[in-house]
Picture (cartoon, rainbow, N blue to C red):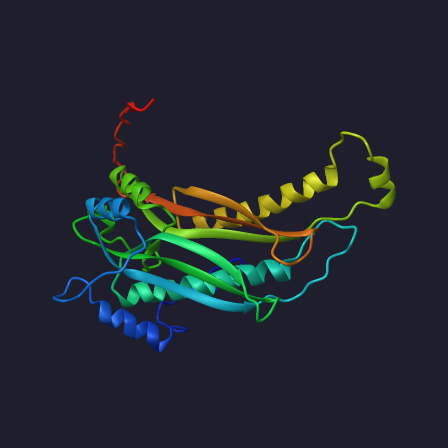
Length: 282
C-alpha cells in the first residue's frame, strides 16, 4: 500500500477555489485595516500570542471523494487496501489545500488542525473530507539554529495541538513539524456457524476477532510512525487512534491514527520543572 505524501509535495494553490483566494486576499493581517480570523478560543489565542506567534487567518481544505468498493472474503481477516488508500488520499487532498491557503497568507504553521468526515445525502458513497485550522506567523518566537519554523519540507508546520498545548510545547523547547497519520480499513472475518453455536452461553475470547482488531490498529500506527521517521522527528505527541465504521457494514471498520511530529529547537534545551498547583475548590 502506498503511504507517501504524494498529494502534499507542493503548495502552489492547485485545487483552491477563486472564492478562497479572494477571501485570503481580503484578510491582509498585520496591515492597516486588515484583520485575522481564527477558531481559537480566547485563552488559546492569548497563549499562542504569548508563545510568539500571530494568528493570520482560518484556513481550510476539503475534498468530496468517491470511496470505491472492495470485497473481502467472508471468512478471512484482511486489510481492504483499496479502501485504506482511498481514505488516506482524500485526507491528503484536504490537508494539501489547507496548507496551500496557509502558504498564500505567508504562514509559518497551522495550529489546532481538525480533520472531519461527512457523508453526504446526495450519495451514500460520497464523503467530504475537511481540514481546518488557524494559520500563524512567528512574531518574536525564536526558531533556534534552524532559522525557520517551516518544516524540513519547506512547508508550514501543521499541528493538532490546542493553543494551551502548543504554548507548552514551544516553551519546553520543541517545535511541531507536521500532522502525521496512518489509515487502515480492515475486514473482520465472520464466525462460522459451528463456532458461534459453540460459544453460546460461554465467557470466552473470540481470538480471531481480537487478532484482527489488533492487527488493524498496528497497521495504522506503524504508518503514522513511518511518516514521523521520514520527517526526522524526535517523536509524535497528542496521538489519537480513532475507529470509524462509516457505511461499509458491521464487519468492516477503519482505524485512523493521527498525531503531531515534533523536533527539539536546540540540542541543549532544558525542560522547566512542572509547577504543582493546588485548586481551592471543594
